[in-house]
Length: 358
Image 1: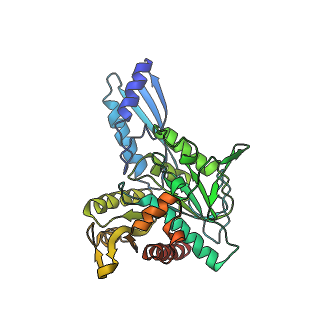
Image 2: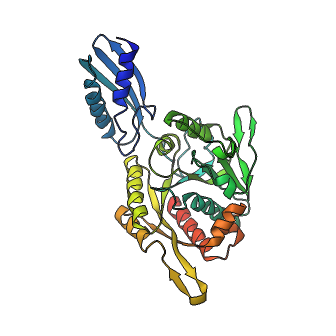
Image 3: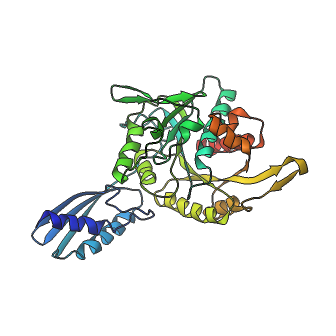
C-alpha cells in the first residue's frame, strides 16, 4: 500500500483524543510507528500513565478509527506503557535520571482552566513568597526556581524584571536569576514580538529541554507556570517532571470556576496530586469606607475546592499595585511586603510548604 494509505491512517488516528485532554494522540507524538502489509496494518502507540484503564481506552478508540479507513481489513494496535516519574520520598534514595532536577526538593505546578485569572502573576508572587519564607528561616537555604512553561505567552521575564539571554555552555543552559530566584522561560529564547507558532511535538521537546538541559542546580521549590487550559504542555509536564503536585488558580466568577474544575479533573486523570485551590482577584478593598467590593462574585474558590475535595488555600485581593509591580519587574510580595495581597501569597506559600513536606 502507498504512503497515502499511511497518511489516511494517521488522519484517522488524529480523531482519537487523549482521555482528559482536548488534543489527539497524533499531535501529542504518541503514535510511534505505522506498518502496512497488504490490507493489514500494525500501529505502535507509546504512552506514559499510571492509570490502568487508559491503555485499553486508547487501544479501542484507535482500532475503531482505523477500521473506518477504506481498504484496511485487519488492524493491530500495540500499546507500550511506561510509568510516569514520581517524586521520591524524603527518606528514599533519589533515582538516577537524565534530567537536571535531581537536586530539586519539590516541584509545584500552577495551573488554571482558562486565561485571564492571573495565573502567571500568581506563580511569580508565590515563588517570591517561598523565597522570602526560606530566607527568613535559613539564610543558607536553597533558592527557589521558576520554570515558565507558558510557551505561547511567556510573561515571567517581564514580571521578574529579567531581560537578555541565558548563558549556554556545553549544551547546558544556565537559568537567569533575580531576587535570588532562578528563572527559565521561552521568553529568553525568542524576540519580544516574535510569535511562537508550534505544534504539540515541538512544545513537548521544549519542556523536556527545560528539564534535561537547564542547569538548575540546588533548588528548594521549582514553581512551574503552565499555560491555561488542558493540552500539550500539561501532558508533556506530567510525562517529564516528577511533580509534587499542582495548585489550581481561579477567580470567583462562575465561568472561571467551571473551567477550573474541568482542568483539575485532567490532573486527577494523570495522577498528579492537587495541593489546593487559590482564589485570585477575590475582591477590591475600598479603604475610605472599609468595604470589600466583590467585582467577580463571591465564594468561587471555596466552591471549587469543595467539589474537588481539596484544600482551599485562600484569597488574594485585587490591587493596582500587583499590576504595577509586574509591569516594573518587582512583584508585590517584594515591593510591598506588608500589603494584604503580599501577606495572602505568603500564607499560601506556608501552606504549600507544610502540605508538600507532610
